[in-house]
Length: 81
Image 1 (cartoon, rainbow, N blue to C red):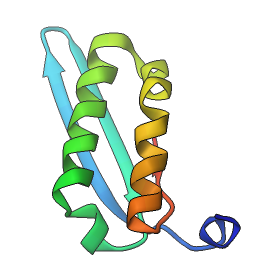
Image 2: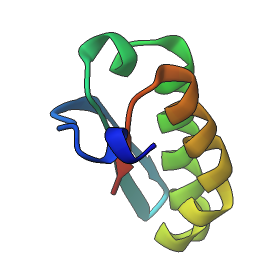
Image 3: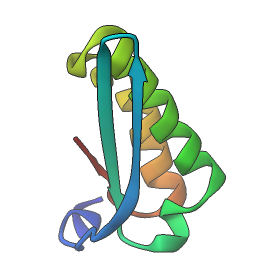
Image 4: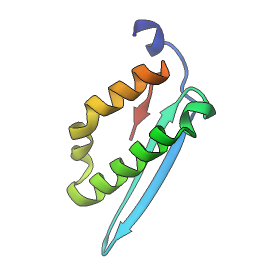
């Protein structure tokens, strides 16, 4: 994991949602476009943006384990925001 932290993550996926008068944008970065375009990565970003729209940005912490599992599965570091 320490080696992963040193690598640059310049790719990623962005998702946005507007629900009534609430809007949210989530960006989850990855090292490669291959990882960023994978179905599980895109699905997680969509789930995160829906969660943020419903509960606010602190809700990302609820899914931190899934983000970490995806990071390990793809052997990449990811950073959300």
